[in-house]
Structure formats: C-alpha cells, structure tokens
Length: 314
Image 1: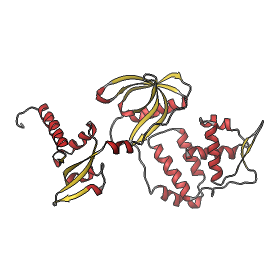
Image 2: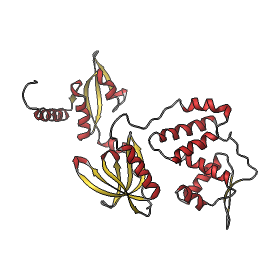
Image 3: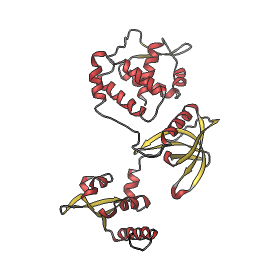
Image 4: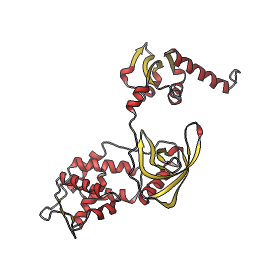
C-alpha cells in the first residue's frame, strides 16, 4: 500500500465533494478493489469516509468532520517524509515531488523543527556509490513504461554470458539487496521473469502498448531454499577481512584463533558465486574443511595462476 497514494486520496476528497471509485482508480492507475482497500485504511486512520451507492454516488469525507493538521502525529509525518525522501533519491518524478509537498502541508509550524529532526535521524540513500551509469536512466524509462503500459525491448546478458534480445511487458520495479530489477512478462519466453537492470543494455520503450495481465507476484524470498542447499565450511581468516566476512555470516559463527585470526563456520552453496566470494578474500582466507571444497579452491587457484604463466614475477 503506497502512503503517498493514501495522502493524495485524502487531498482529493478534501478538494471534491464526492468522487467515485472508478474515477479514483483511473486517476491513480490502480484497480477499484485497491481503492476500496485504501478507503478502508483511511477510515482506520480516523478520517471518516462515507460511501453512497447509485447514480452520482461515490466517496466523500463526512460533512461534520473537519480535518486539520493534527490528523498525523509527528512520528507519522516523520516516517512518511523519510520514505518519500529515500525514493526520491533514485526514482525521480513530479509525483514524488508533489507527494512530498502535500505531506509537508500537513506539518504545523510549531512542530516543523521536531519533525525535521526525526525525519533526519535515519538516512536512506538507495543510490549506488559507484557502478553502472545506465541504472538511473533505465529506472526512469521503466517507470515511464509502467505508467503508460508500453512494451520494453533490450538485450539481456544472463548467466555464462548468454545474450538475448527481449521484449517485455513491465509490471513492477523491484529493489532487492541493493540491486534494481524489474518484473514482467517476457514475450520471448512466454512467462514472467525478473530482470536485473545491470545486465540490460540498449533499453528502449516501444510505441506498442499492452493490456495488463493479472500477474503472479515475483518470488523474492529464497531463505528456505538456500538453507536446504547450504553446507558449512570451516575457514581461517585474518582479522583484516573480518568486516567483509561479516557481510555473509553472523558473529556467532566466529571463534578467535590466536591474536590475528578467526575460525569461521561459513555457509556455502557450492556454485560459482560462493566460490568467487571465498576467492575474493585472497591470501587472508584459508579453507580448512571439508576436503573437497578445499581441493576445488586449489584447482581454481591453479587455473587462475595458469592464466598469468608459470614464470616469476617481473
């Protein structure tokens, strides 16, 4: 449920005497069912909205109710501002600017300083430190395609460097573990797919429009699947890479081994990604057991050394 949409619906109801569910749905590009859920949420928040059936019917704020700027608490407004500000750092657009302006209009002058302090206590910046410069313009293109129900075409690089040209109906932008994806129906595969933006090139919004489907939600939680696939390996690491290893496992898996090293029960899935993680720790990490993982790492290290030849350093 989008907080900025709820706030916008409240503003519309304040401005209009009565408005129908279908009109609201078209205004916010959602289904009437979503509007009914939003209205229920607004009612639960303490703003009484009355619905009238029949010709000329619709939703309206009950005439005897007078909304004022105290309807949102300091904590409510701080949370809303924090969320909208974090989105505006990566997804730009007039609607976010307008939503921020509307929320700020609810802030009483005497509470403005307190709300500003609370909103600034947590900073969420979703923009990357460095990386693919196409991500930001691609976000804007996908966002425009979502709003206008236009097809997207691009070249996609999958695992092992396989490249294919795709035409996709876009349905969702997804931010998962600091990476941007978009979810849509691939006309090439005849199925729903999750595409990582950093693997896309030549993204274009086509003139062709599409009729939206009732799409299944993307599967984003693989914790149970990964837990079944994981095996524990024991690694010995130097303290200088402790912070890096903590990105992949908790402190409870670490045990001191002298003054300079730690023994770590590291959760490993035996695939390219996880072997690359262990190798990225360089000579500050040694796999102790099991033997077959240790031998696989040795094989990969020998293969890497062979790329540079057998001679001495020069």
